[in-house]
Length: 335
Image 1: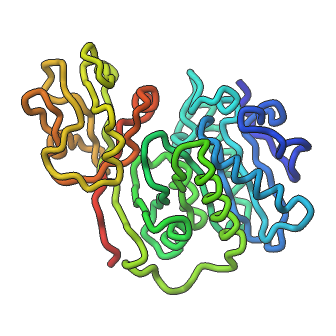
Image 2 (image 1 turned 30 degrees about the vertical axis):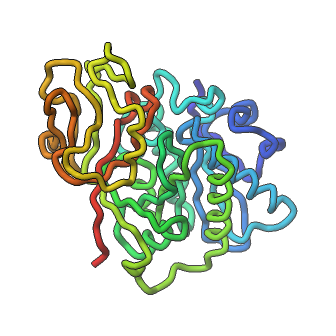
Image 3 (image 1 turned 135 degrees about the horizontal axis):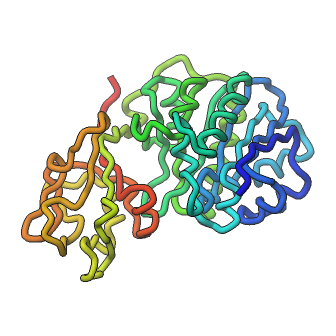
């Protein structure tokens, strides 16, 4: 499993003809590709940190095909992440660390890779950073930022008026990139949807042609802003399922319909088939146990204790176990 960072100053021959699962046939591993444009300030674009989230690659190959015979509007540094997992259409391979959880301290091979990438990027004149992701449940297209600053907000609202501000998890790429330039993670729906690819393509085109960030702040009327206040995980010793009476927890079979809906107290997430008083591990931004603040079990049902808005709920059990059940958000206003 090769995690040695590859460097290119031009597109490898045949790369734009590849589907995401074929990139591993040309790229020996995670790759940085530097492409010269009319403007020296560099737009950094990251794709395939999760190998099954292919919309970023589909949009990028369409964009780069358009500019094959002309100069890019601005220079691009493209990071193509987990090409090995992409070859198997997997988010992450067994034994690997999640490529979007390695951008902080750590000693694994993946953390070493991340440090090499950041060292290279620190040498560039960066204009902005865009990390492109898909999600598996029913979610709108939205942008995520880690600083409530005008440039970050503008970069996010250029993609969608729905914006999520978070500081946990703090080991994601956008968090690391926010130390160098305005940075955003864009979530463009489920992979394989033409609408998502077209939306990302239009956004990248707009970002390439953005000469500068406006001086004026974003108006509160122009953004639906949410703050991630907690992360909900399933403990390793709790089994989960949908319509599965043998599982410790039976989640609602359509639970992802709750994403980005402000749901009232008393909303059910599922049933408990075990005698435990709490089956979720919930940590707030400060890493404190917040389980009792958000959920309770009543007559065997897992119920919300307050109004909240979940995101990233999915019907894929593997993703829930690999990452989390969901994030909990609250609406906030710009001051």
